[in-house]
Length: 144
Image (cartoon, rainbow, N blue to C red; front, side, top):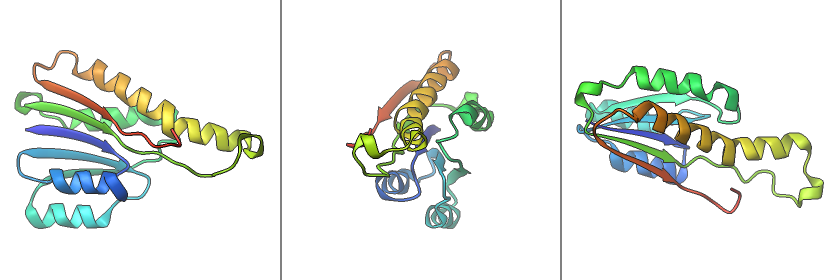
């Protein structure tokens, strides 16, 4: 089984990647603030492995608990590959820096920098002893 942890799957590139990876050889852990009902329905229709986590990556202090939930669902005896795709990001609000509030700066850094760094760190830590192929793919935008 190929396992994929994909952030930002509610729309756009994250949704397209998850859609493309949906098949019987893969298990997808999709993460986004809003659950993507189209992906969930498609997975159910084709009887594929998709587990969705409605989670706001701005809550950086809760990410480790999210990863606990994900890694509890992995059958280490069936792992052929482990893949992390850090895709989530935010560009809002679009302002010059002097017009941003402290909260807006913190939210942007949490989603665009801190969350993917924590997820990558914990992914490496938790898969260190896995004897399989492992990949981390970080997708960025101008906001990040």
